[in-house]
Each structure stands twice: as structure tokens, then as C-alpha cells.
Image 1 (cartoon, rainbow, N blue to C red):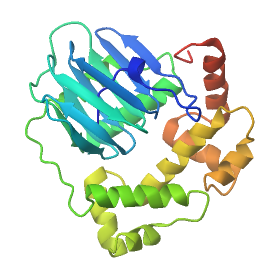
Image 2: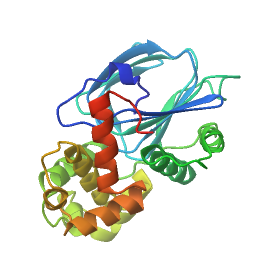
Image 3: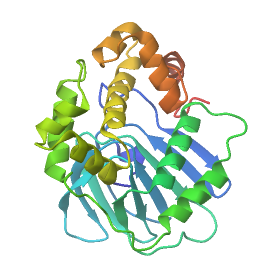
Image 4: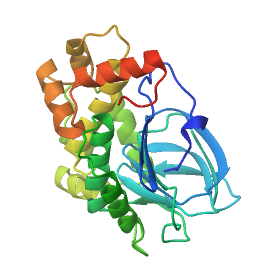
Length: 280
């Protein structure tokens, strides 16, 4: 998890995507790219977070005790007004942040993270697509309010089951080391010494997505990190990230992100060259 300010994120040479931001009525919505960060602040506004990627580091949320944290992919998070936040990660992960900037504070006085909520997952994915490729009819206030309603649900248990933090770390390392090859769900299950069927069910319960879907997301994350270097052809990006062809890469981009690799490269490179934080 963690809710963070883009101003505290540490840029790395491999991450070229800008922070994307929308101001809509009483809301500010930000899409923070996967990057190392270090932040410490007291929350002056209620904020909702959504971790698209798994990430690890140290944090102290609402306490003075700093502990290691492991954020699961698709984890919903909430930080109330007045909460002390300290968080840092050497890698970070793509993160959606929704802040109530006007009006009353959002419901809830307890911070949480790693909540898997199917409706929140769909909302966050829709908002990410809209931030990557804005359209005139994007309904930001409705989406933000709906996500706030999901965050306001009380006392939702966190089901991790067999996908423990250590197993998730092993899985991420295994996937990242073999992304340019033919990874499959069976090999992921064998790594964790689980049957394929049991692993698939446990992973879906812990993350809200199938292992195959997660594998595609990891491939896309690496592809996005390569896209704006201005040197690597999209066909080479596709092969380096384990896609069969450039067409396969483009299909996955459009289906999951709502934008083509070429469109993302154009908007990202333009933002990087002009210093803008948002492509629109």
C-alpha cells in the first residue's frame, strides 16, 4: 500500500511515465507510476488508494511503529484525515490516488490497505484507462464517489489464504526473471508447491484476479517502462516482455489499458519533453 505524494517520489531512469492528474469538482484523482518513493506527512484530506501492482517497503500508518509492508495487487486502501503517514519503497508500483479536496471528509476514521473488492477493482481500472486516454464524457465525480462508497464499507476481512507475503515475493521474482519467455500458470503453481487448481483459486481469492491475468499485467508493466526510451522498437518491446508479436502487445494494451502502445509512447514522450504531468 500506501498513499503517497508524487512530490516525494524518486525518479528512476527506467520510469518515464508522468503523474497523470484530473481535478473534478470536489475530487483530485492521480495515477502515480511505478517508481521508488519516500514520504512522510500528516493527511490533511481523506484519501483512497488502489495498488495495481504488488509493492514492498516500510511504513507506519497511524502509528509510530515502522514495519515492513507487502501490498497485494488490486488492494484498496484508505487514509483518514489527521492520520500520520510514513512510507517508502525501493520500487513502488502503479497507484491510483483519489482525494476529497472540498466538502466534508470521507466516511471512516481507521486506515486500511490490502482490501480486495471486485467493484473497486473495476472502478480503478476504468479510472486508469481514462487517465491514460482522457475523453470528453469521462464521469470522474461519479466514479470517485462510487470508489468512496466501496472504501466506506466497514469491517471487511482480508483473505490472504495460501498466498502469503513470502510466496508473493517469490512469485514476483520468478515472473520478473522470466518475462521474456513462455511462463504459464502451472510453472507458477509448481514454484509455490501447490496444485494448479488450488493455486488458481487461492490467488484469485487473495488478489481478485487470476494468475494468468496477473502475468499479463506484469508483462504490460515492463512494456510500459520500456516504451518511452525512444530507442526500442515496439516489436522488440513485445518480444522482450513475452508477447508473441507487436499485434499481441497492442491487443493487450487496448483491452486492459484502453490505449495503444503507440498512443502511450506519444503522450508519454511529449509529457517528458515538455515537463507536463498530464497528457491532455
